[in-house]
Amino acid sequence: MSGFVFSEKPIAIASGEGVHLTDTNGTEYLDFGASYACTPVGHCHPEVVDAATSQLEELMYVQASYPHAARTALYERLSDAGPGDVDDVWLCNSGTEANEAALKFARHATGREKIVATTQGFHGRTMGALATTWKGKYKRGFEPLAGGVEFVEYGDTAAMLEAVDEETAAVILEPLQGEGGINPASTDYLRAVREATEEAGAAMVLDEIQTGLGRTGSMWAVERHGVVPDVLTTAKGLASGLPIGATLCRDWIAEDCGNHGSTFSGGPVVSAAAGATLDVIEREALADHAAEVGSYLREEVETRLGDDVREVRGEGLMVGIEVKRGSNRLLRDLALDHGILALPAGRTVLRLLPPLTVDRGHVDTVVDALAEVIA
Ligand SMILES: *Cc1c(COP(=O)(O)O)cnc(C)c1O
Image (cartoon, rainbow, N blue to C red; front, top):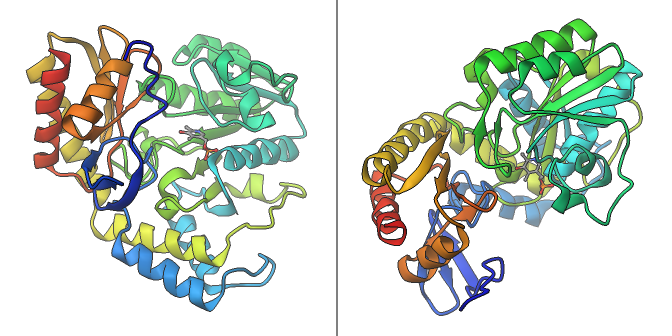
């Protein structure tokens, strides 16, 4: 098994229910990462399945210039959910498209070109969003990408203040980096970015595609820092795994956002699925639950494995465990020997992103397994 590359997983998934997935041999797995934050309310939640199925039978598509009840309801829900006055909503089909729209809107509203992004940031793989993504491995062989992007060290306030000027259209960053290794930003840093962008007349774009929808213990991670951005993007779990993205903006961005569009924007089926997903997240207070179970998870890992790992990071149910060697082998052992699916974030970080519905019992199972594979 040497040279085993865990991206080629020998597990064919056939079905999912709640926090579990079942493969074609009937083996059940606990999903602590296989759904990449795309199933906040669990796999195949009955309310989401019902909403999507009845919509599917009634109308599969109508173009977005014709009002449709499911889309209109989703606009309202997202508008209400947006932090502060970030209440104008643009719908698309993925995270990268949500960021692509954010960058286009910011350029149009400001009439400026320059975009400031951060080291280790991940914002997607289309030519614009990819240009703001840090790691070379995602970009190699695809250049030239969209121009005008300047990178600054994530978390370095002085570097940010230096970079943001009268030519800056937008600063884009994650409030807690996912792909880059589960790296949290401090409140002081986010407030400094807010002040600098406001002063320069630039847009502060927060990518909450992985952190949003309750995962880090509040609907949006940024809420806990008392910062209101100009644009906030969400995607991943918004429609429980059906393709959707949303760009939420303040009026000054939305009023002058130019000619942008997408054929599938706010399609009836995904809109219905997203509405039902938001219903469940709110009704079941999954953000609070994520905060509670997430701190239990981090505490348990610290207590049981503190000496065997380098660091435990994260907020709510977005958790990174920095291990002392490559994480591939551990991920394989967790999956094949313990029936637990997790994912990496870089070479040495084990990332846990379970459905927000996991409980302490699931956490105990995972920590027991981690103790065996890591020790
Ligand atoms: C996944 C992700 C994206 C890209 O979303 P896609 O739907 O894969 O295009 C962008 N930003 C962050 C923070 C993500 O986690």
